[in-house]
Length: 142
Image 1 (cartoon, rainbow, N blue to C red):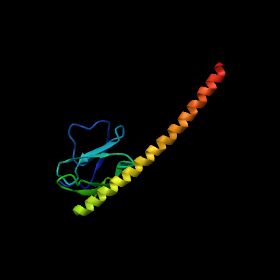
Image 2 (tube, one colour):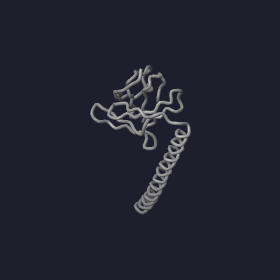
Image 3 (cartoon, rainbow, N blue to C red):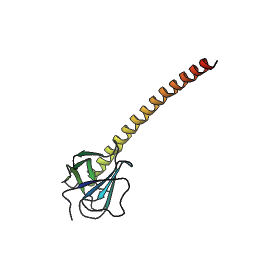
Image 4 (tube, rainbow, N blue to C red):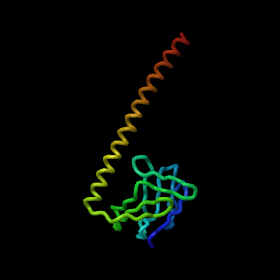
């Protein structure tokens, strides 16, 4: 049965059986999962990172963005979850799906490059701090 509402449930680990109409959210594992909203019965697993999907909680309601495009599944359903309501999108052509997938890969690559650059910069600062601490230790000991 096609879903029109999704109820958020915060979990640590996935339950053995997923209930339709429930958006399971594991903050610890930065993952969300739910039964496909079209009613096909497939399980949708989403990685919650700035490069993939984000969940916003508004009291007892939840929004998930960007949209969920189940193009690797038989149903190829496409929808948003906004304030716990399922908002259906139009069916996309194979060329539109390919273009979205390419854009997603590009966006993820940019995000990862920024994260890696930030880590590299932070690592440089930590190494410099470590060197200063070693020098200070040698002065105090010697």
